[in-house]
Image (cartoon, rainbow, N blue to C red):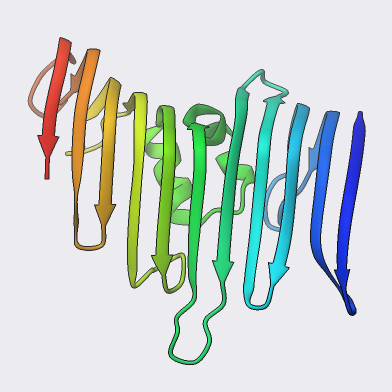
Amino acid sequence: GALRLWFQFAPEQSREIVADVELADVKAKLADDLPGIELAHLAGRVGTRTSGTEREIFARALAFTTTTDQRLDPVGFKVTLREGRGDRPASGELEFDQLQLAPLVALAAHLPLPERIRADLARFAPHGTLMQGRLRWEGPAESPQSYAAAAEFAQLGLAAQDAFPGATGLSGRFAATHEGGELRIASSNATLDLPRILLAPVAFDTLQSLVK
C-alpha cells in the first residue's frame, strides 16, 4: 500500500496531521476495550487539526472494504469538538455528504461508540443511505443538553422491534431537535412491518407522509 503524511507543528505539539492512504490488509484497534478491526482495503484522505479548545477530525473520499466484503462507498465527513470553558458548555458538530449504514452497522462492535448506540444499531439493523447530514449538540455527547439533526435518506430500512415498526425502501428527509421534529417520506416500492398489528409486511407502490 501507500501512505503520505503532512504535519503542521506549533511549539511542543502538532496542530494538523493529514494522511492520504491506499492500503491493503489493514488491521487496527481503535480502543483498548474494543476488538480489532480488519479491512481488505482502505483508501482516502483523513486528518485532524487543533486550534485552541477546538479539535476537528475529517475525511475526504474515504472508502473501505471489509474482509467479509462489506463496502463503504467514498464518503466525506467532518467532526468538530469544542471543549467547555466557563459558562460555555462543551459542544460538537458532525457533517457528512453521504453515509451508507450497512457497512457501519457491520463494524459497530469495533468502533468507539456509546454502548446505547451500538446496541440500537445491532437491534434495528438499519440499512440504506443518509445524505447531506448535519448534527449539532451542546453538552456531553452521551447526554446533550440540546441538539439539532437533519438529513435526507434513501432506501432506508429498519427491523421491527417491540412496538417500533420496521420498514424497507423509505426515502425522504428528517429534521429533529431536543424540542421536536419533522419527518417527510416520499417513497416508491416501500414496505411497512407492523408485527403487533399485521401478520405480514404491507407493500406500497408509493408512500407519502408528513409526521411532526
